[in-house]
Amino acid sequence: MRVLIASVPHPAHLYIAVPYAQAFQLAGHEVVFGTMPGGDADAVAAGLPAVSFGEPTPLSLANWKRLGLLPDQEKRQRYTEVLGLNEDEQDWWDTYYQYYAFNARFFLQREPRADIDGLIEFARKWKPDLVLWDAWFPLGGIVARACGAPHARILIGPDYSGWAHKVLAERGGPETDALGGEPLLEALRPVAERYGVPLDDDLVLGARSLDPLPPARSLTPGPDTLPVRWITYNGGAVKPEWLHTPPAKPRVAVTLGLSVRLWQRGGDPRLTKVLEALGELDVEVIATCDEEQLKQVPRLPDNVRVVEYVPLSQLLPTCSAVVHHGSSGAFLSSIAAGVPQLVFHTDEKLRQIFSGEGDAISVTNADRDTDSWLSGYIAERGAGAALNHQTDSVTEIRATIAKVLGDPSHRAAALELQREWRSRPGPADIAVELEKLTATEG
Image (cartoon, rainbow, N blue to C red; front, side, top):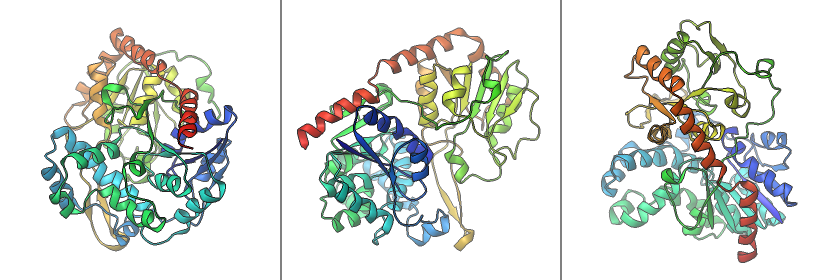
């Protein structure tokens, strides 16, 4: 069987798809990664054949504005009112409208483009039996339909697009049509129509959705959603010497992920308080941060080791706790490692505020991750706590961290979450399930 995996060309997305690719390879199937220019090197480094076409489109606010891709805040707010969204739903809609739909428009631009059309034409020539696509890369659905292959989505976190598609179908009408209809469908329309692909549920959702979230936090549960065990893949890296032996003191990891480094400048305010708080605890701190993120930290405590990058798959199993920004990747990797979590989360709304013109245009984002609401699940299960760096003092943050480290119930709860994670089907089991899909629809 031939399997094409389509993904956003960024490690935070591509790495999530690699375990599925490896599972199909180990089952004897032929796998190719299809992505945009710039992402193929990461696939090749994982030992996977890859294809990409054309030249990279510049990643800049000025270029995004020129192409008409930036979100319209007035429309975003109007949709929430027309759809009657509650507070939680507004948060999910804000993520969908400002981040997901923007990302879809970027990879589905109206004019013919070599990176888009080249991937579709490759699929038509190579003729895959199955297409798996990163749910933040909806071009994958068009690729599958254009070459006649059944397809499934790889969810990398909360299914904002599937949830929004359902909400618009149930609550939409003339008022949402007047606002422009479903943002994802409108993003898909130009490329879909160019290739004669109908705009329907299958195009948006695929035949199956692979969901790594705990069932209590799945946004789109149902018979077509397959629960899957998240596998933490961070690429290959030489194991540093300080990881060769267990730590002499409790080790606390501090990580803010990779994606934030693409746009954040001037330092990260979350690090200032948390590193000061950790500096007075009898622990060893590993802060996976770069120089830019540390600009607002006046002094590094003596117990803090800064490492620009170390794979979480190597670091987390050695830790007594992890402090992170709230992304679904860090959330799920910490569950897989059985580590108590302290998650940065605030009550502020997710808003992108754009200012300036031309090359001087800039954006201000909310000071929290879009997925940080998942911290509520960790608190409910007793496997950690949320940290509000905007309202909590250094003393309060220190007390919260000390409580999570000192109370064994948090570790026990984290290990229970890990046991539940282990009970879910892994990528190899999913590969078998998707083989049945190709037999049914092929």
